Image (cartoon, rainbow, N blue to C red; front, side):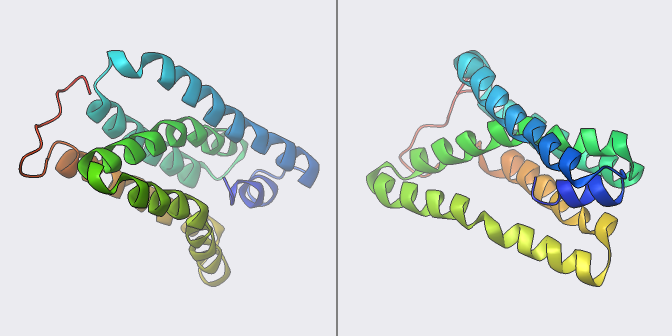
Length: 168
């Protein structure tokens, strides 16, 4: 979301005002995604939802990267939907792995969310030294990493903790 304005003004050719107001699509998508996910989370496989949304988000950013135009800008803004679903799954799974340290773990996760400024900073460095379009390789790689984490880690449990069902 942070680099969307630069994408929309530079690659899509939008005015700053239009680009700034269009970022509301990203945040609106995040809100809508969170509401929809909250309504259906108990009926779906959380593991599969996580893998699908992280993969879909990677593909959305890849499409935006390849297009480099207004359509790509709209596609990029849709990643808000994926992020809305990914964060609560990461948060709840992390807490369920270590319930005895839930308060500490939740504090670390909240700070990690607040510390999300690191990724935009890294992307800004890539923009400065390599270019705007190339900078989107970073979020693509991060979404792919999340998908791999979902495949490899979400189904694993600690000793003494029962494995999650596919409908968790």
